[in-house]
Length: 248
Length: 228
Image (tube, helix red, strand yellow):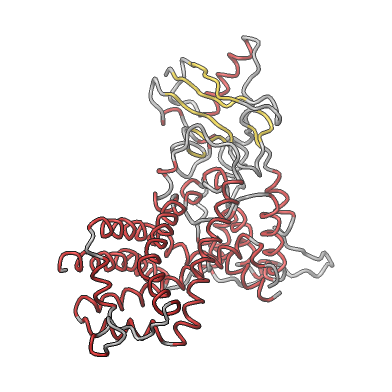
């Protein structure tokens, strides 16, 4: 396959950045998208040019590190996969492909296609955990009966890999789907309910402070989420937050 | 509880509540207007009651005005914050692949409805306020000195819909209102955190409401235009 890549290049956080065209040839349809970028980078290195910086780690859709906005969609044209699971067979010979970083004030560009997603870490640190006393007589979690429906929903919420595709896809750069998944995975389980009030208040406060936008329920986040996190979680977080606020 | 309006969720909650309140008002408004299609007398009596009842004028009307102003002001505040959350736009963005046109253009449809409200207030509300509180005529009669002349509301309504341009503006505005409601009504359930066994039915009802209520308003305007 021969392709024209239009890639966002930005030297560092202070650089203005611009789209640069790169023709690539000899791309196999069986390559993953990241392997195609590896081929491009190899060519750039051999020519003495700076390779395109992009985030990646596990390359099997688990870690949530890859973060490419491909042809106007987070993780590319296919649904419920990450960019590393996208294969070149999803494109046609001669295609022009736009590759951009996640765009959000709370995700500033570090270099090229790499953005700083530590705002997600700070939201997690504000309450995305449970406190377990290690006194020696802690109850075995498996001994606590939990409704199957709640266990399933908590598990579904916990599959969020924190990649940020929800923020990238939302026209308001809202992080509500991510935060609601993290709130829900604990709110649905007895272990998480002890700190539920503080958790939701603190996590939403941190989310707002990071500069993410407001949710306007367009549903784009759910469509583009590689793990299919449901909008139902946002409704749950809204309930949790409002109840916690009225409780004081 | 304190400072809930300073949070993103609190603002959306307030936005949803004001929207639900305005949607209840729309039902009342269209119900009264619709009586003009089949009974001049009933329409006149209801209009006179709404226009002179102290509870409606002194309490409900200020609450309604507050609700309208709050909804629009909060809408602009949320929009400003949302725009500030992304300073660099995408060179390529396929938003149509993951969201509806209505959900992405609530500001546009809202601004059109706001502009229409300006015309609507000029057409009816400003005139009513002038007659009642400036000229001091609370009779509601065509001729205030002649009790037999009958109420003026029906004739004034019919008069407004003679102009095809005005009817056209009303039709366009209500189509835009329908598009606004098609996303907004559904969205309000999400914002207030509603999620129970009735939610599927409520979302179905919201679609019927969002198309039905504006369609009734359009029907009333077109009916009076062609029967005048």
